[in-house]
Structure formats: C-alpha cells, structure tokens
Image 1 (cartoon, rainbow, N blue to C red):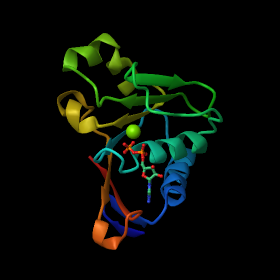
Image 2: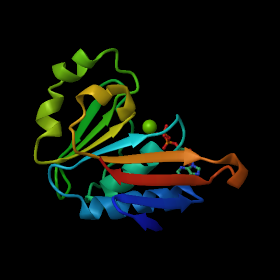
Image 3: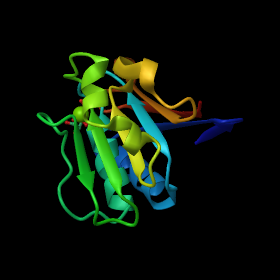
Image 4: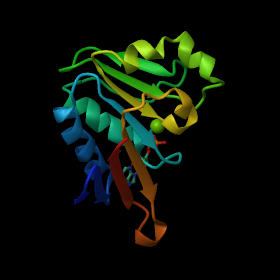
Length: 148
Ligand code: ADP
Ligand code: MG
C-alpha cells in the first residue's frame, strides 16, 4: 500500500484481495461515514462492498440492490446503507427515498456509482476509485481511497 496525505492506493490481483481490503475498511468504519465507489461496470465495486459488509459483521449475502437503489442491513456492528445508483433517473428519486437521512445518519453509507449523484453527495466523504489496467492482467485492479 502506498500512502500520501489523505490518499491510499492498493493494487489487487484477485477478487479475494479486493474483498479483503473492503473487509478491513468495514472493521474500522465509523458511524456517519459515507464512502463513494467509482468505477466502470464489472470493475469490482460490489466485491469491495461485500468485503465492507463482512467487516461490519453482516453475515447475509450483499448484492447490488437492482430495484430499490438502496438496501439497509441492520445486523452488523453499525447499520449499513448500501446504495447502487446506476439506474437512477434523476436526483429527485434520491430525495424520495430520503437519502439525506442515511447520508447524515448514524450508519455507514456506501454508494456505488456515486459519480451519478455528485450534486447531492455530502461535502465530506471518502472516495474509492477502482480501475482496471489490462496491461497488468485481467484481474488487476488499482484501488485509490481519498478523503474529500
Ligand atoms: P461492479 O459492482 O463494479 O459492477 P462486480 O463487483 O459486480 O463489479 O464484479 C467484479 C467482477 O470482476 C467479478 O466477477 C470479480 O470476480 C472480477 N474480478 C477479477 N479480478 C478482480 C479484482 N482484483 N478485484 C475485484 N473483482 C475482480
Ligand atoms: Mg455493482
């Protein structure tokens, strides 16, 4: 892991490794934190999210909430609010589900495709960007985490 001020970078070579980085983060996550996950389809955002959920002590399966935009998990160390806003039509939809209550609540929020709702993100959050680099292999991922 490379570390600069407010920015951490990992390189992984398997889904298990990406899961494990998420898991470490989930173990240390604090109430009220908002994590955004940015990256193309199939890059590993959900794999990472599943790690976070495991780290929070959530045993059940965590998949992308296709029809609901947001899924709540209450059985872990802290409430976990998993958003996947890939299919969001407009920002009003976020208001309708009462997103502010979650963003500024006492749980941990994680938002896949957060770049699509940039305008309404809390000013302070933790941005995680996942990228492939096919020159480094099909399973290579670069994970950058920065405090915004
Ligand atoms: P997203 O949620 O970003 O659309 P998923 O997490 O659903 O993506 O899927 C990522 C896919 O990439 C999975 O099939 C996973 O097995 C695969 N994969 C291969 N290498 C990695 C890696 N290093 N990290 C995460 N996923 C990986
Ligand atoms: Mg996903």
